[in-house]
Image (cartoon, rainbow, N blue to C red; front, side, top):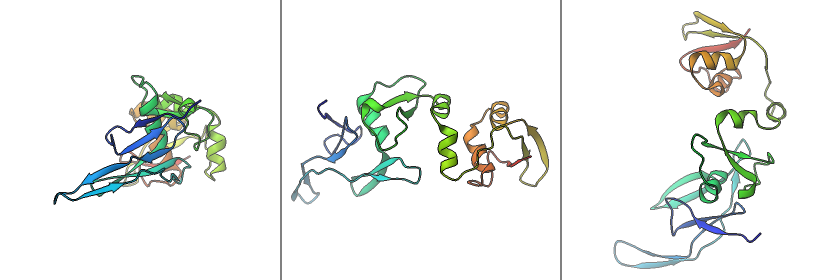
Length: 183
């Protein structure tokens, strides 16, 4: 398969992403307000993993840098968007493999259920509390409700289970204005 390059949406003529998951700046001439010009040679940019292992890249325009997920740039450039599917899944579960053939659009549920999620969480040192009851308290510490599991609490409240999980595992102090604890 030959590597194909496409402009990054919002950065046309400045940055491109490849079908292999590489990012480059484009060779271009910059004209300043005073009329002077500067020739800028394009180059392959360095990708950096974040704390969760996803590859990121910094894009600069008008001295403003934005950090972007490489897998999202590839998906937006090479995969047809599917209505209702706003997340991107790495099919082989390798977060560094951002080739377009390894990516797919999924919804939140599909992404949460994909592959060896519990195994990956435990490998990062987090505790997996599947099946444990959870208790919801107000910020003042007053009991609100007990739920058989995180998914049930999220379903009843109409919210995302991820934020409740973050509060339970100590990543956040609260979720949706409540304190959460395992029973």
